[in-house]
Structures are given as structure tokens and as C-alpha cells.
Length: 74
Image 1: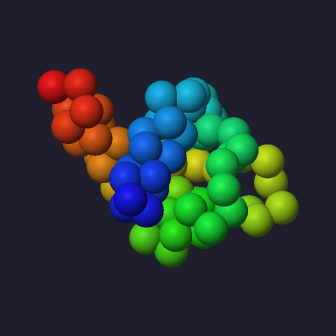
Image 2: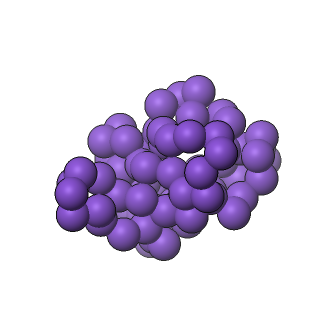
């Protein structure tokens, strides 16, 4: 069950993200459980400061989120 929560959190981060023009990365607000966000940071799916209110999705995070979209919506 925890894996599904992590997958869906990454997917929500992706779906609610926007592209930053100056750095060409996707950014999202991080209003999700800290333990899941920490796991995604440890897996290098997201990156950013622990003090910031938003995170950047890494290239691998975006790729994983796009795979998850296909998994859940075909």
C-alpha cells in the first residue's frame, strides 16, 4: 500500500506542476506527507530545499510520473 501512495504522490506532484522558464524544470508545491516526500528525495525523483514550499521534479521523476500516467490511465 505504501508503494501505491508513493506512486500517486509522485503522479500528483507531476500533474500539479508547472515548468520554470529559467531552469527548464518542473516545479510543484509540496503539500504531501513528509515521509513520502523524503523517500522521493532519497530516490532522486524530486529535489529541492527542505525549507522551501516547493520542489523540483528531476528528469527521472518526470519519466516515472509519465509511466505512472500510462499505468493508471492507459
